[in-house]
Length: 65
Image: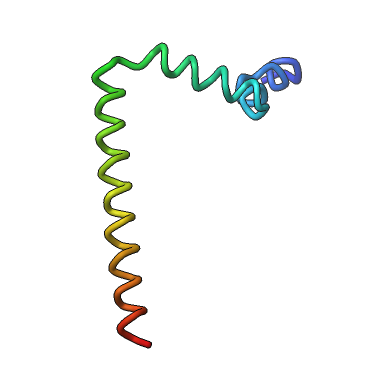
């Protein structure tokens, strides 16, 4: 890889705020509706698991006092 190729690599651009936004938009354009829906379902499952674990930790700490 030449020095010019190294500096023009998209990874450098994506590390800037505007480049990161552009990358997210590009990913959104390349992703199907089904893939987006599956991602949202997985994110919901993760959020519910976090909530359940947080509530369990709160109960443990309250009963330990």
